Figure 1 (cartoon, rainbow, N blue to C red):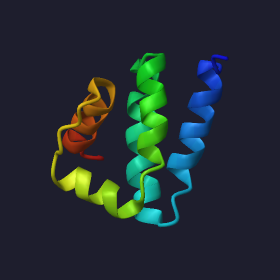
Figure 2 (cartoon, one colour):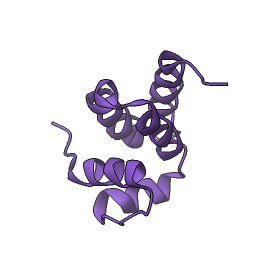
Figure 3 (cartoon, rainbow, N blue to C red):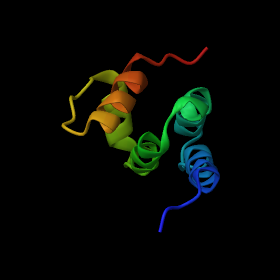
Figure 4 (cartoon, rainbow, N blue to C red):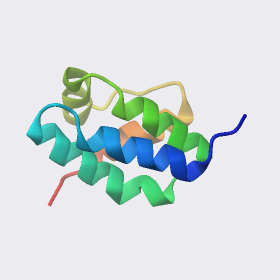
Length: 86
């Protein structure tokens, strides 16, 4: 069963906004809001996995890009590594 794209977006935005630390809430939610409307269904599914990574992993990925074999997840990693909130 294919899940509705809007449902995935809502879950991703919610998870990105309530991480546990205010700094990551701001960083991850602003990143997600900037890119979410430009992603296809497969990329949205990978973004959902991305926002569910633990906080230490997200901080590490922001500082150091780490190539991933999954091309959709790798695209998100690259965008996140390059992302600098205003």
